[in-house]
Length: 158
Image (cartoon, rainbow, N blue to C red; front, side):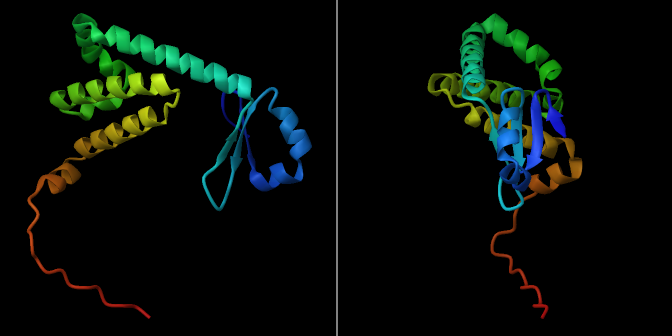
């Protein structure tokens, strides 16, 4: 089963039983090894991983340079919904905050060659947009919290 371009998925038990033939697939495909007891494992040739990292680093640096220019930054803010449609649900002030934070994070990621923090930043802001998109949830989260209110412990079921 393929989950994306050039990625093949298999269970880790299948991989362990057929590691020779599975490893020969890595020349043509990345492997996503699905585990039941933990996070999935992604297996990729080192040269492809290095090319991905170099590309992300160059792209991150280019983005940081382009967005340092006020005119370019304004243009990106005006068109961010084309690239990240979920930003539609963020208030305008938060779109600006998101953009500034993402620029800072992607630039730092490019310097260290680790883009995990950029992915985390995107996920966190997307989650924020989901809250804004749900009027009931957004309203509930904005309601004041009554400090000191006693909460009854639920009955134990045995």
